[in-house]
Amino acid sequence: MAALGQGGFVERLQFFDGQRLFASDLQQLEAFHRAMRELHNASLHQPGIGAGLAVSGIPGDREIVVGPGYALDLDGHEIILTGNHAEPIPPVDGDPDGTPAAYDLAVSYPSDDLLEVAETRQGICVSRGAVRLREEPVFCWVRLRDDGSGVLRPADSRLGDDIAAGRRILLARAEVQHCQLVSLSIAERRNARPPTQPLIACGHAAPVWATSLEPSEPGESEGQLLFLNAKVSTATAGFVNTPCYSARLDGPRLLTGSVEGQPREFFAEGLLSIHDAAPDGFSVRVLVVPFITFGVADLEDPSEVFSAWTIEWIAVD
Image (cartoon, rainbow, N blue to C red):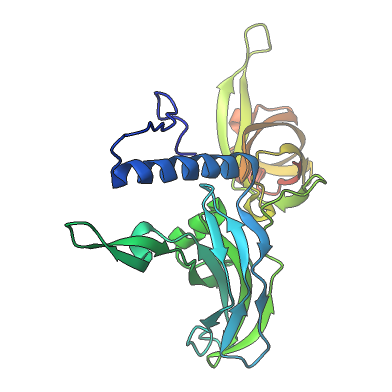
């Protein structure tokens, strides 16, 4: 997508008979076609695996084998493996608690400084120069840790961000113990061709509510309105585009609050609205409608009173 947002115009190189050409002219021609191809890839496809890149291994192996294949990253770069690649298993004994260590195997497009010179030629009146560079994918094991809720996430947040964005393409997930493969899964792979059926996901979140008191609108009864605000993460669903979200409040409506140091039981309802929708989550704003004989401003700790309220959500892309 580098050709977009740069201003100016797309310029097509043109040649004429008798023109003196320099190496930079031909390199610009190759760069033009590459930029157009990457723009096509990034605009019409999502980061993921286009074909092949099968991963194989059995428990006890000290390396896994990645077969030839083709993938696209976030910027439309074409990641191509032309033959089998053997990747050694990470040399670790396992987790400190004695269980196998979890890793993701990712592949990425090589930067220019990593390209190996495949052929050089002697120039006229100048020294030798490279005429072919070999593009080989870069493989990387990404260590995973439990985030405390049973979900495995990359220990290195930068690598995790690269995988989530599509700069690195996930090939497989492995468990390793005693420097040997314990298990191998490819369920986490993403296809570069979006499925024809919609992606539907749902979840349940227990957000940390932030409360705010706001004056009522003119013409309404005097008093203050209590709002609950929170963020809901949907990152585990893996949406690439912003889906259509629906959400509802879940939890008891008969609550106990403290007023002037005395417990008071009351019934309350909430009117929920969704804001700031994004592929990895959204914000909710809840107007609390209490059916009580005292105002919501009298509650000593509103966030504690409504902490039992949770969010159930569903999203369709």
